[in-house]
Image 1 (cartoon, rainbow, N blue to C red):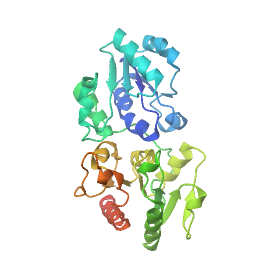
Image 2 (cartoon, rainbow, N blue to C red):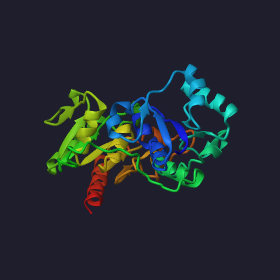
Image 3 (tube, rainbow, N blue to C red):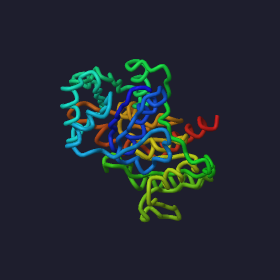
Image 4 (cartoon, rainbow, N blue to C red):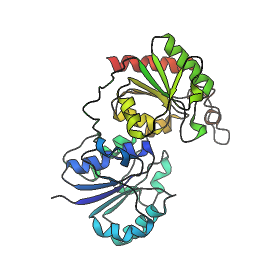
Length: 311
């Protein structure tokens, strides 16, 4: 039997989806792995080979350090448990505790444990996890998959014209404007598609429809039987991509998109033109990115995505 490992992922949906590439690779190579991630525990049946557990309390650090051979910890400055685990773990087992920083910055190399994982911000997180397993852990069997397996009774892309549109995210600053999303949805409907907003009922305007789901599993089921997802930089894009659904992502900056864009399946990222100044102190492109992404530009991006996914 191989080593016993604990993997502590970020608790956001998208962070968790891409982080699971790491424990999936460990499991594939005969390791016994427990993965701690609060959001995805409700989808345990979709990850049959990966035990998913909720985060322990900070006082459980001592017991955690006594129960595993290896520890993989995604850095999180706001989590008392993570900070205590890193501090005590690095003191007791400096080589067995690996800290993983996911920052879209060149300054990541200044972090104290950067050499543990050597994340490349120019590559998607899922690819970074694959390379970490290959180049640093030297695992013989390597995959970019996170181990997600939809229930067998579901029909992949059952609704060939349905486009899921997710117009919200964890922060308002990441959201493309409402009026532009509505214009986009009306255009897609005129093209014969069936746009569906995953949002509050007040998005049901001009004959457009919106829908919310009582839990993550029902949302994943709906996504799996749809054909495309369009949305802001958010966890839903990673979930759709992991399910093999082509995605179009709207993002304010290419450097962010390089690291965080969905990468399990076909994806197009739409960002403001690099010709727009983004000088430090002014950040014109960052501050006004919503104005610089037009409806027509997103429509062109979707046409490209549809062509790629159908080839």
